Image (cartoon, rainbow, N blue to C red):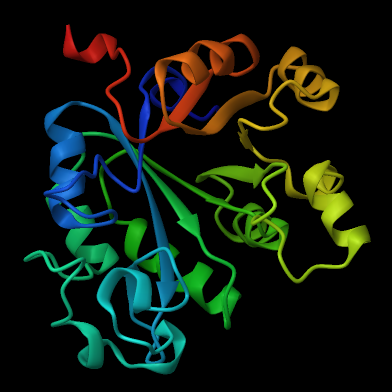
Amino acid sequence: MEKYMDWIKEIPIAHRGLYNEKYPENSIGAFKNAANHKYSIELDIQFTKDKKIVVFHDSNLYRMTKDERNIYDVNYEDIKELRLLNSDEKIPTIEEVLEVVNGKVGILIEIKNSKNIFDLCEELYNIVKSYDGKYSIQSFNPFVLVWYKNNANHILRGQIAGLSRYSYRNLSWCKKFALKNMILNFKTKPDYIAYSIKGIDKPRITYLRNKGILIISWTIKNEKDMIYAYKYSDNIIFEGFYPPNKKNN
């Protein structure tokens, strides 16, 4: 069965929601703001110690909450009352986000590389398989894509890659090379590639795009970079400005 992908190609994607000084990243407020502006949403998920899926980017809580613990070391009950950046926003669960978005816009769910990664894949699938809106999963970890290809092939899946120096920390040079150049694509069979703006003009990316693979560039922070990104990719993941969105017209 052919997968419906137009929404990923046509609608700009708000990085961690449409966040700003009022609504912190990966918050319910940021996701509502994106939906109100008719942008798709990119978000991050990971497990707590008791395997509750929360929407949060960092493995450590400190940057967003001033709590010095790691998410995988605490139960959900330990963090559910924490506030994001001194706002009224809490760390949401994936169920809460899906309930709020409720199919209004599409969602790109980044599965962070973490402990019990395949349990996280399975638990997310158990949750999203009854969701009626548009969504995809994506990850830097190619084995996340392999899990979904083998167990839920109908779900759209994207391989995240790029030249960002933070993308492949603590990996050997050979693993970095394989991931940056997406050597495992023959095994993962991604529906799209999300590649960093740094390196989006690589011949490998152009080759894949010419082969019909959808290319998304990240993270676009201004109009100048947006114009450059659209030369080499089909869509953008953005933050910090409001790119044109034909759905707003």
